[in-house]
Amino acid sequence: MTQRSAEPSWIWPRAAYVHIPFCAHKCGYCDFASLAGADAQADRYLAALEREIEVATCGQSQSVDTIFVGGGTPTRLDADQLARLMRIIKSAFSLAPEGEWTVEANPGTLDAAKVEALVAGGVNRVSLGAQSFHTDLLRTLERNHGPDEVARALELVKPAFPRWSLDLIFGVPGSTIDQWKFDLETALAFEPSHLSCYGLVYEKGTALWKQWNDGAVRSLDEETERTMYEHTIDRLASAGLQMYEISNFAHPGHESRHNLVYWANDAYFGVGLGAARYVRGERATNTRELGAYLRRIEAGEDPTGPAESLEPEARARETSVLMLRRTQVGLDRNDFQLRTGFDLDALLGEPIKKAVAHGLLADDGQKIAFTREGLFLADSVLCDLL
Image (cartoon, rainbow, N blue to C red; front, top):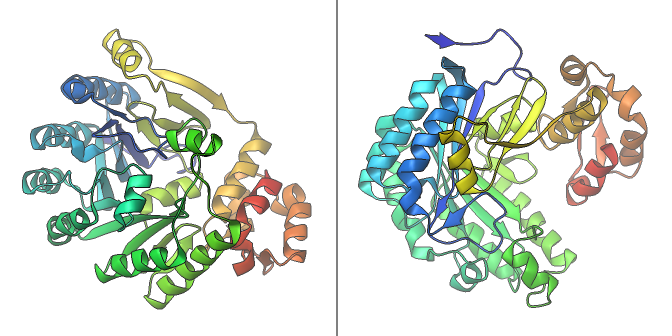
């Protein structure tokens, strides 16, 4: 029997995230729970994942609107393992009609058998990590695919999935504005309905952060990164891809519904190594150590690591920051009060007025949203709200 809670979406999840940690190589900028050289543990991991999901869902199939399988590299699994993963997910999560089921994939890891397993399992959206179409920049990022493999992967993806997306990264050390323009044009030639364009972040503890901290690589200057971002906004708008979140662009109706859950600060299930979940106001994250994850679940123990329940005001501030990232919807006063119980102006009136006075936010009396200039200083504005 499928269970769908009557509780609102910010209390009980309508979305599920499933983490697959296996990779051929750990990219230098990656801060996710991923690891290379552990493929032999894949079947054992899937068995543990199935047990964790059963506990997380209380043994009842949960009706959800979105499912997202991320990593790591989910398509590092072989076709039989992918089919098994699809069965595990479907036994616990019932995708609502017109629901969205996304799987992340890296170029070079897809073949016809894997695509067939995904389609048969019910997946209807693929997010492909291209990152760049320049060999030297891929090498800097420690990606283990070449530019030509993106095209080969899309030959499999485009006929099979009604929705698909490409990920790109700008601001790579040593990159130029012309290289970024080339990457955008190459991506647009594939006619994607969704593009994610992220500015490179030097996450503390990653290999790239250590290289940057040691002076082995130099980050781009702020003006060059701003020019890249500005060109992204204008070029994708001219191609009909509307910015709907600070780093995400889509044709109308092709927005990532799962990521919109995060940006609304709605609840979500999260299972797998290092996965985060947010259920009934408590946010928890599983251990990131594979051996500990497997041992705990096999012993019938909880794999959870850090957990917290935010105080109402802290949760309201967090909600404002996440909702404001949505560049079209923005931060609506009525919706904010419904979700948090707080009056937006009473809680955040001063930082909002400050940002409006500096031309970084626009306020029409009902909704608050970033101005164009505000997009380039978004981190500063969001920190003020927190």
